[in-house]
Image (cartoon, rainbow over all chains, first blue to last red; front, side, top):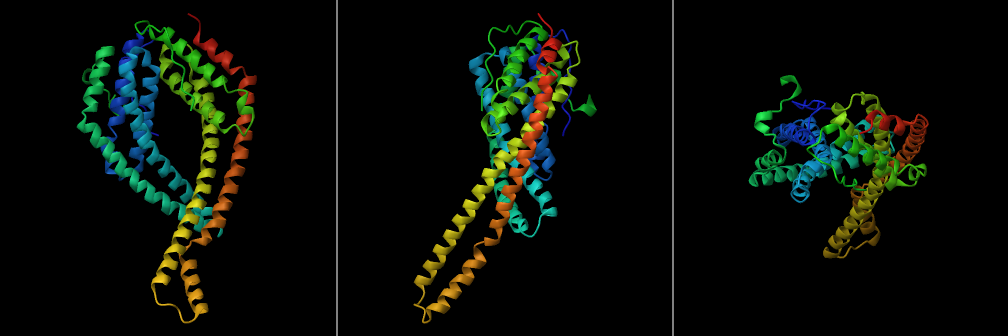
Length: 172
Length: 194
């Protein structure tokens, strides 16, 4: 599993609001760093890493919700949830295909045709998910969600993403 | 899925530790809200909800760990174990209906195939020999209906059910061990008081 990016500037006496900005923006940039690889679709680990990061981001948003105005926060949370869910559907199929492929190695003559049939059906469903993911990120780009999200977090926490400049572990 | 309770009255301009303590106490309570229900293996929804509650708790311990003097990592390990076991149970609870649905899908394909063959035959000239027509129909039907997949799907369903029983037994053992080890009291103690 991809390692979580270190959150810069965290210390035991930090204020809740500032911690909110630092953690949420780090997790946001971490998730988006896997966007190109996920859309390319050549390595299923890229999508897996993006999915894991998106869950970390959602968890951070749940944890720090009290730092944001409730009404406007819900819309941003909903958008992140849509990303997590869309990636999750594809990831679930990757895991299932991988799992059944493993079972195939030890399957008896009875199970083999069933597993092969299941895998074929899941591969069709997985191809459709690739289209959904591409459409979602196209829409987010058209709506300039990334810029709006970072500005929103900065407005309510005082933490600016470009100044925080989150980096993967080997750059830290 | 049960939604997490809203945390009210928290001042975000306070330091992280008191806020984190308040949030964590609520989320610990949400895990234990299912302690009676999960003693029945048939309570699939409650087992799933407890998994989600453990997952939320795990992420919060990871996020807020820096705010506490006590190392929360040993608690995280225990939470991960429970989350993983409940996750494996949930996978089986999802896979069994999915396999049953696959059987329905195979049956639906079979009906479509039969209908298509009948329509095709009706459109053709009337067969001179009904027996030959029947055998031709049957050969094409058998070739297209994927009948050999069904016994295997039933075998997979049985395999997943067995695994689910074994996983639930392990979960129950771990859950009892956690309770006997006073996990909740130890964790709340580690968070300290205001």
